[in-house]
Amino acid sequence: MLSDALSLAIDLPSPPDWRRLGVHLPYEWVDAALAANDKASIRSRRLPAQQVVWLVISLALYRHMSVKDIVDSLDLALPELADRCITSSATTQARQRVGAEPLKWLFEKSARQWIVHDQMHYLFKGLHLLAMDGTTLRLADSAANREHFGAQNYPNDKVASYPQTRAVTLMMADTQLIRDARFGRYNVSEMTHAHDLLASVPNDSLTVFDRGFFSAQLLSNLATGGNNRHFLIPAKTNTKWTIVEGTEEDALVEMTISAQARKADPDLPKTWRARAVKVDDGVGGKPRHLLTSLTDRKTFKRADLAACYQRRWRIETSYRELKQSMLGSALTLRSMSVEGTEQEIWGAMIAYNLIRIEMAKAALEAKCQPTSISFLLALSTIQNELMTIGRATAPGTIPARLKRLRDRLVLDLKAQRPGRKFDRVVKAVAQRYPEKRLTKKA
Image: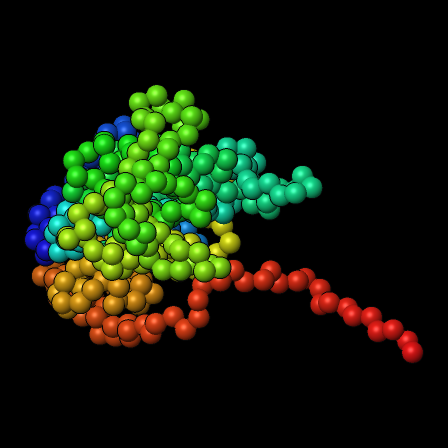
């Protein structure tokens, strides 16, 4: 529980005011992240490295505020050096001294620890349920960002107005905590990042993919690279297979692996098998199938797998929360430099996980699902609470404040969403100019 971690941190000699930026991040983790990357402050500064870490995390929580306003509002500058003035250039230099690696280290450390807290409460028939998907982020338009990350190219040699980064995340489907992530140049495919994330997939798990990740190499490596690791993915409309046993509704099928895939990975066999489950009739009346390595029909029924795949959409909502809700609908990220951009992305994912772990804790106490709690309500509540927890706050009042925060999160649980009224279809592209019709003269 949070109060258990608080007592440890409060006993530390003169700890920084880290409570307002996330009681789940122990003081030792921040020091360890800085020490591991040789970024700990040696000189006496008003914005030492520890405070800069909290600043970067706050950039995502308070996207509507300037960097200087965040420092002032959260009292991040150390008071014993109050005779020194904090300027915008000073915050930029402080972020440059810390760099991106400590934030990456802290994200990986915190993600591993936070996921362990409640993962046993959210199992799918004994398996950890995960989702993997990709997205893109618009970056601040600078020469450095454009050269390093690149951008989308359009017909007629046109280039996107802003540089972009392509990212892939591995997320816990129920709590929506980001377990691991990879991002980089826009022209690096999602499949490349997905292969790098396979090492982060735990044993005894089921990972749900979008059809864009349909690859015999990726799915086979996931299943064989650990113990009891499984996949669930929709088949493409042109996927061909031979039924080994069963019926069209639920069958064990065999598929041929292309020569190109076997050339890229000589360890792949010529054929591979999976279970094909008919879900419903898709577009144009063609049957839609899900492919999975879960072959036990008694334990994993067709309806269970169909419902499980629907939960994959939660990763799409997590991207909306990261890119719209937390960014305040801002067009791009803040940082103009490459290292600052990477630092900001890792900090944003830490901030997102901070909100999600608090929502998961509140849901357990209220005995409801984390999806019943509004992310926007959680974000605004945590923003307000962190602003009011100051240095003068007595340690004994912090557990009460945390309880009040969670009570507010579950006070207005989201109403149960009704079923979809209309099928998902591709909408017609809006025309820039209205159609002009000419009438013939009589």
